[in-house]
Amino acid sequence: MLGARVASLALGVVTSVVIARSLPPEGRGTYYMAVAVATAAMALGHLSVEQAQTALWTDTSKRAALAANSVLLGLFTGAGAAVVALAVVGVLRSAANLPDMWMVVTACASVPLSMCVLYANNITLLSNRVRSAAAAMLLGAVFQCASLLVLGMSGHLTAYSVVAIWTITSGVSLIVLISGGNALVVRRADLAAARATCVMGVTFHAGSAAAFLLQRSDVFLLNALAGPREVGIYSLAVTLAEMSRLLIDVVWQVTLSRQLDRSHSDSVEGTARIIRLMTLLAAGSALIAVLLASVLVVPVYGRAYDQVDQLVALLVPGILLLGASRPAATFLLRCRSTRFVVYPSVMALTVNIGLNLVLIPVWGAAGCAVASTVAYAAVAACQVRFFVRVTGTSWRLLLPGISDVAEITARLRSPRHRSARLPRTS
Image 1 (spheres, rainbow, N blue to C red):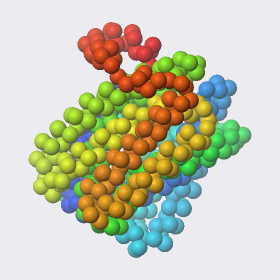
Image 2: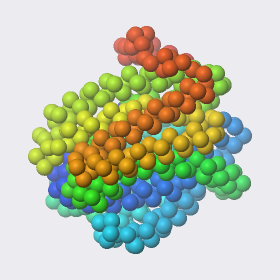
Image 3: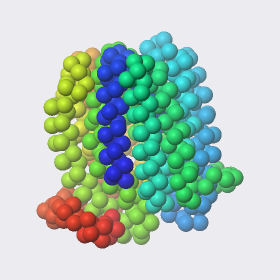
Image 4: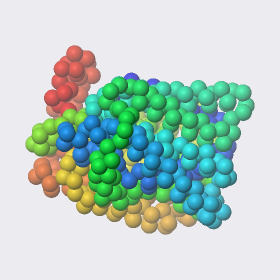
């Protein structure tokens, strides 16, 4: 998984450079808003089925039905979400300063495919088939990067073609997941299990929708209040800042199945250790991301994006804090309580929107970055607080110490030691 994430990160950097060099900030902002509409449709319409899958996975009798339903549920919910999104855009396009309708239609064609990828990838990780998930991610990134390179080098890269390739990439990833092994089986759906999954997902969905809006509502507000140029600059900063989550996302993904397969007490201990590990990795990642952005952004992307390194420095702390708290959020799904899942995201979304409305007119894209970091830190603190309250774990057990640093160093130095110890630590 780490190898695939590193390779996908490198391909993502190449992709972002090709787009930035081929399109001005206004063009990047236009394509990004079309993609943002489709992403919003998926995030608001997926009904939190993947969270329900995770919560139900502890019941081994339901696992086969959850796997069989994943693709068909994705197509059904994704198609509905795409239709609703297009209807909303048709009404609000002029008022919200959204792109051409055909570009939005092309982007929304990805929603059913992306929904299938979301559900199927979650089943793949829960089944501990990490190689299949890694292959789907990597091959999708290869296809996207190669296609954009060909168009960019030939001088035919446009905002519309970027959106079209983005849509096709979802289909490539889905094909790889389906063909990746027997963990994911496409066959007749179990309607009773599908209904139960959707019902449970809907109970969590307010939190999922709020979590998405927390991370993307600022783009819509920035587009409406400051225009596509600011969106183009800010979206690049967000892309680069989110790349800094490489290591902590890998740790969370490869420990997901173990966190849910264990007993309650073992899961509590394992979650605390994963949080300590991810906190250390987040601190190191933040420092590296800020240093690289300050040195490389202008030479690589051009003078038009000279504000990006400052925005990255403002965004990285919040993004990494949010990532480091994900094991706590995953553990809270075991409790199947909507309060633990919904409240943190709704609270932070309210803070984020309020701060954006105040700060964007004053600071533009920098205001978005400040608002995001404050809101992300609030979510992380709330999730960890709930984890501490539910489990009775001391805050001190979530703070990394010298022994954690020594353990990570030993694993990095010795592959044999790393492979032998990782299952127990996770």
